[in-house]
Image (cartoon, rainbow, N blue to C red):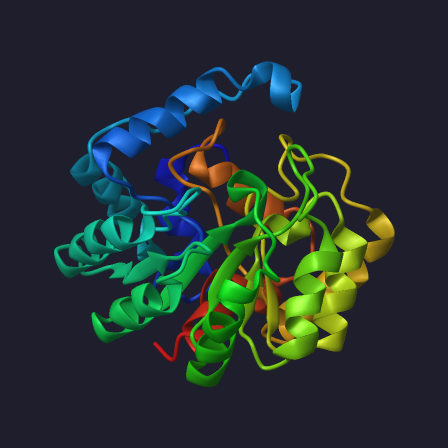
Length: 289
């Protein structure tokens, strides 16, 4: 599968109603342009060019997902400094209200009113949150966040967490810091973005330890993210069948066709039941959709 126009045949052959992608981004225009500029200039940082493939309007990008049969997707925003989260949440929740396929999405940042920001987002219908420890550069164990982790754990609301050190580590990435959060809040539904790249082993160990830790496939197994340890693949297969691996893509901020992520998963050779679980069933079950 090389082209996006082949995607519908992929999920139809599996007998699915479509695809459920837990890791897509829709952002306010000004912020989106800054993100794209960051990727455009990011070649030296990541060691290779990262050309954004999908640069249309919100409507064009959402329409492309619909055309491929992505029936559920997110609008993951991530605050990287104080004073951003509430405005981002207002935008992403409004986007979900006018985009039926979008799971209402929100974010937060360690700041004095963070609990109120999260409570307000939940009251407005947020069903999933995103935090980015690598870009935000903050400690997930900040005392300001402690009541937030507890609230989300009690609510069963999933949080997509970029906790891996890719593309560049800081003092708060890797399985150690977020593992401390899970030690205190073992019921937290945490979706580890990018399978925790490049600390795959450590994040798989967290999934072994905590029943509500999931891992998303975002860019993992693609030619852009080579080097997944082959000895860990049996665990990937087991976790997928156990409901713990979720389809993610990073759309639209990807340097390859959307179809390439699906082709990369298919090439793992884990079979149709695994693909059905990862591409729809696991996320639908987690979200009770």
